[in-house]
Image (tube, rainbow, N blue to C red; front, side):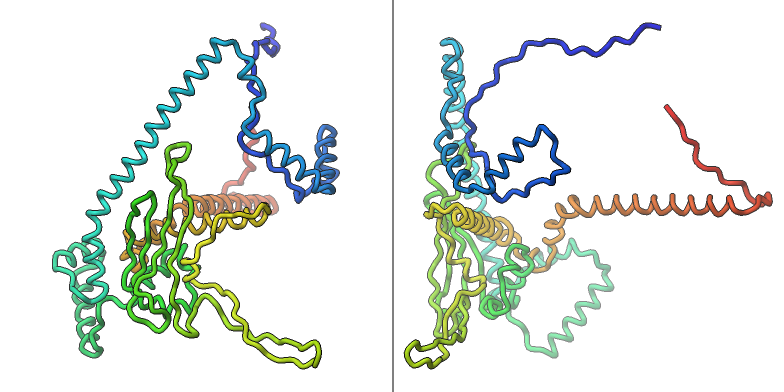
Length: 410
């Protein structure tokens, strides 16, 4: 038999690896949990010692982060060390990349123009929807028939429901339009539902329309229209999202900031604050008194007072504001891309089925597999118990003896 050929690493020449400084700081955290002694290998001791030093000396971490920040984008000298013909080719590739970036920007601009073109076609449908919601018009028979095509109900059930509806209409005064349409749709929309408080609902019942429009500069405006109510005098409250004038790395529009309208609250009706009683003590007389203090509170109407981009150099403060800015922008996108185009699906709750597809795929599918595995394990355990039970009984020939599965070796 031929002897096996021993593994041998071939000495391939290795290409030089550029050592340019990365574009982002490497995060150094002084709050990282240190590993236990039992999990530390000898080669990791130096790294653990350094982590311990960083935890004890936060000023050292800050100094290193500042040093790294000053190195961002600076070349290590690798490119400059290349031969002149190679550097010339690198410069040529950069020029080609600039042409690619121009095309990316043109692509995004054409996409925006296409969105505006179809938005103009959607607008009459949104206007027609608003008239039905607010009781200014009734849907046509064609619209109703088209809407019922997706309903899985037999004809008998439909006639029974229509008869019950007519009976209810005879007993109760006819409702105008679809009451609380937008409030119901908002409460079904996942990202908006968490923002709507019980106090907000009374005001949001007066919502007559939510619409959007594109701005002259890159961006869009969300417009909330209200009927007369006891909370504020505004007929409309809008919020505008602005993009930066220059496109991003891939030609995408980059979110810059948002601006909201000031809400003219009626006396004592501001839903974004609450009144608290606070005790004050006079230093001279030692007497105490109770004063009413206005403090901010959670409300959907805080949506119209968006956070401003961070100006503070404090990393924790800046990080918190950046997170709030991202959430605020995502909320605006959800209203623009989900709530407004498919308001009726959010009102009925049908849109939730599509929102849950991703969650089902990520979690429930695997849970089901785990359950099946558990069932298999249970079956195996039951089979093992049966085998054990059978081994204790005498073989009376009434049934075949069960044998343990064969252990096969490769």
